[in-house]
Image 1: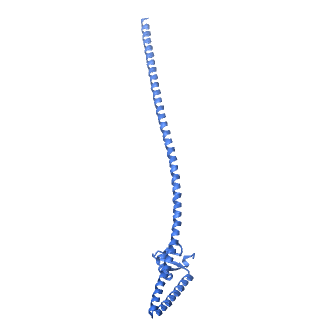
Image 2 (image 1 turned 135 degrees about the vertical axis):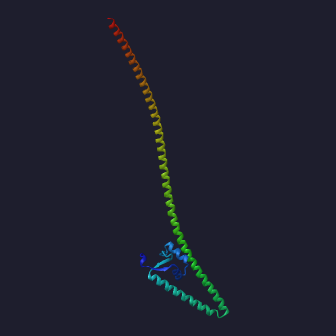
Image 3 (image 1 turned 135 degrees about the horizontal axis):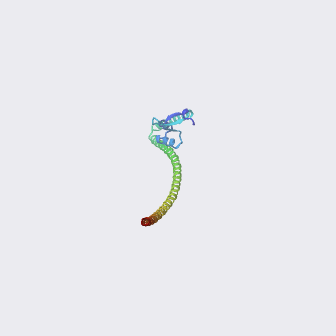
Length: 210
């Protein structure tokens, strides 16, 4: 049934009564995908059936109830005598055992189906987990490479900083040397100026004497 809108919604509890299954079995079969249905907004579990499927279930239920009535009628007839009463009791207990056995087999089949689905889901989850682990290991390898590259860059930066300090020291030394040279030149110029001044004075004296 591809279109749920065209389906007849039967409560899971009613479906359980029609099929002589427990409500849990019906729910498990819905969860396992054996039956089409689900839990709707009203909080009630429904089974989705076609009209033909519903009619078939109702007819089967009526035939079964008729069969049970006939069986019970035969049992009542047997109970008229002591021997018949014992046979009727035995047959009644046997019928109950068969019904319980059939119900348990239905429950077991539903559980096996549900277990198979859970195992498939577990297989998918384990596969996803394996993929996630692989991605995690890949990220770890990438992080390790980035860490090594960062350490290499930091080492290079440290070397450049040391080189820069050496260059700054050399420039500082050269600046000091230049200042010394300039100071010596200033002294030399001052000395020359003094000599020139002395010579001028002597020259002035000579002129005066003449």
